[in-house]
Length: 168
Length: 142
Image (tube, rainbow over all chains, first blue to last red; front, side, top):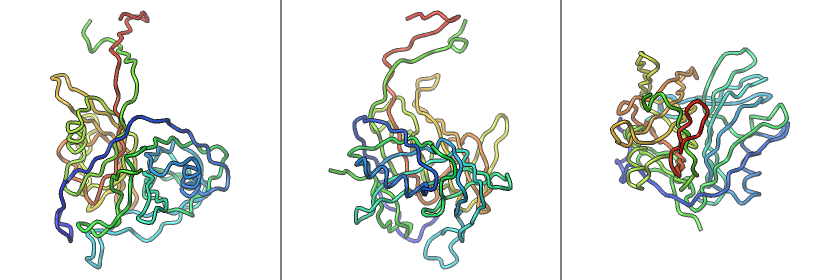
């Protein structure tokens, strides 16, 4: 698959950090899943993490999937947003928490879920559009310590993407 | 009783946390094996894996299913790294990809046949067993 920019090296980027604490976060009703996670973890001083959604219910959700980029700027882009009426049952999912170049939290989340019609779907969840519907939505968090994630522009793919980065 | 007949319980602890990005056209499974080899990690668990594949080849039982992209979002992935029966480091990844219509397809990612499309963002964690403890008929034998 040929991307618009040059193939960059190394092809696999890695950082590592000593083991640290794990967290189980329970989000309350009404809070947005992704924003709520970012704010909660930032308050704990956690800016980068691997995250697992353990299942829960949202009152609705907005998500996108991948489609070819008709402009050719990138090899692919996100589809128009899909709005799914609730209750939305999150079967499982994962996310990566990191920061952008201005140290603002960024969260990248993919999940598998059913909507009110019961059909199984999956996709990339969007922030500010996935409110928790039942109390105690559980999320497991593995902070990555000094081996963080930083979102920066990638000249190979023309996307802003998470990259491993040493953090102070 | 062969080794495969025994329940093996490992007492141990988690070690290093690894953050990684795998760039386009690198195989998902082989990329994770490369990461562990470079860091001298013998066993690891996938903590989170988010990204996309060009196409996906998924194994389930005796079936081998090609899911054509271009661009399949990895919606869920779990898995582990460890030595196979010959002592070779191997990653086994299980998960689900969504196609452009949001339809899910699930299975085990076939080694060497799942090239990353745009990116794979990954958190792995090293697993360090203190030593195997076998449980046979409910009794502990060190």
